[in-house]
Structure formats: structure tokens, C-alpha cells
Image (tube, rainbow, N blue to C red; front, side, top):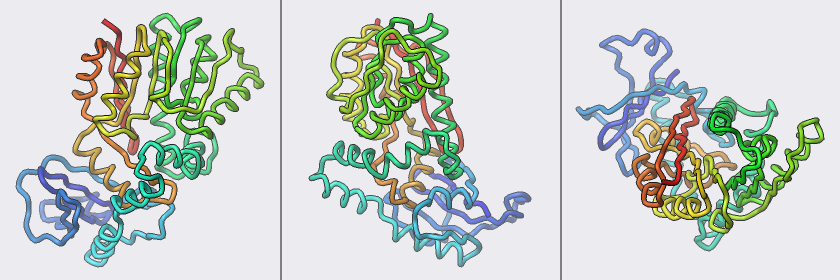
Length: 337
């Protein structure tokens, strides 16, 4: 069974379609539907919205993977399936969960992010960014997507003469997926993450790589636990991958400005771009949260990000998009002008 998601200008419809309909969809196929308004309330709908913007289909077994960690079993099929899905969507309230999370940290969203990545979030993302087979389809897809983004950055810096002896600040380093290969290429890396667990894991992985035979750089990388706002100093290159998803647009502007102030020459950042399709998939993930998925996620318009870079005196010289089934990341390299 497939869950077809039709997004409209002001609403979207979730339709359950059997495998035979998905494979042999003809003009008379009539899937059952649940109408979702822009305010995220769910109701049955007997009308149709004329202006369709886009359509995408997600296998229900993958939706179940998105719902990893919940007690919910998706049995989608006909009216009964739609009724179950409707009830599930109504019962799942991401804003309520976020309010509870903010209450635990006194309303401090960054503290909530820190707490998440030091506890259940660390366990989840350490698996995703590791080599264990104990990941589901969605997590494996995210691992592969993130690896593609890292490979693109490494290709860029190699094409531009390498990083031997170059100073690099990797802000939001996670488990070191970018900081470690940069260091092993000879860069003098200062890597940091808001989570002490993440920074510690990155340091452990670097030591393991050297112990396993990788050539140690002349300057050993430094791994520290601190937020982006606390990063200081001057570097030839500043990198920040897949971190902006935790920042709303007003804070992203400040974050980019701060990172730009650290970069003498080059700033490389990635973010989840805003499109209708990605917003729909993000919403599905919010509606089916596992216990290890609790932080707010933000999508950003590329034009807004580029405008902030321009105000900071940087011009985008390279851009690429990584898009797998569940990982979407726009990568930009900007040079100081």
C-alpha cells in the first residue's frame, strides 16, 4: 500500500492507494482521502481543491519506519485504514510535545537541542552516522545522504588545492564525519558541537582512525563541546553541515553572520531547503515521532540564506543539492568578496 500525498496551495490530502491501483492507476481510480488544512487539523473532505501544486507517493512500510519508536501500527487500506490514520494524526500533536520539551528547559530551545543530542538524540545519530547495521530504512537513507554531502565538500576542497596547513572551523561537527577527513588531509581543524557526547565521539573516532593506520596531521584536531555562538577566532575556512535545521530563520541569519565573521576566505554550509514536497515529508515525520525524535526542525528558503551571505560580504560560488528519499540538503560554498 502506498500513501499518496497531494499538496495544494492551502491544504493537502492524504490518500490511501492499494498496490494494484498504484501500479495500474487509471482515470477511474478513487482513493479514500483525509483532508489536512494549513493549520494541521484533520477532517474528512468531500470537496476537491482545484489547484494542485505537486504529488508524491511514499510506501506505507516506509511511513512505518518514520514512525519508528511509536506504539502506532499503520494498517492503511480503504476507509478503515483512513479512519485509523485520521485518528493517529489527530492524536499526534507536535506542538504539544515541543511545549513540554520547552517546559523542561525553561523555554530555552538551544538548551533543549543540547539535552536531546546528549541523551536519546546521541544514541540515534551515533547509529545513523556510524557503521552499524542496526538502522531502519529511513535512518540508512539519511546516513547515505549525509555521506554524499560530506563527499561533495571534500571534492570541492580537493579541487581547490586541498587543505594541507589550512585552518578550518567545523561548527556543529557531530560525530566528526567532515572534521576527521579534513584533519587527515592535513588541515588544522577546530571542531565543536553543542553536545559533549557528540564532540567526545568525534574525538574517539579520530583517535581510532589514526590507531588504524591513518596518517596523523601535523596539527592534531581539537574537539570541543560548545554552541555555534561560542565559536571564536579566525580561520581560512568555516564549515557547518546539517545544523541550520535546528534554527528558525531569524536565528539562522545571526548564525550565518557569526560564522561569516570567523571565515577569512571560505564558508561552506548546508541546510534543508524549503519546498512544498519537503515540507510535507517533514510534517509526516513530526506527526509520527519516536522517543528519540523530539526537537523542532526548520526548513529555509535558499534565497534567504544567500541574501544573508551577501550582506556578510560573501558570494556563493558553488552549490549542489543532495536529495535521497528522506534526506534533503542544499550545499553552498561562499567566498569572501
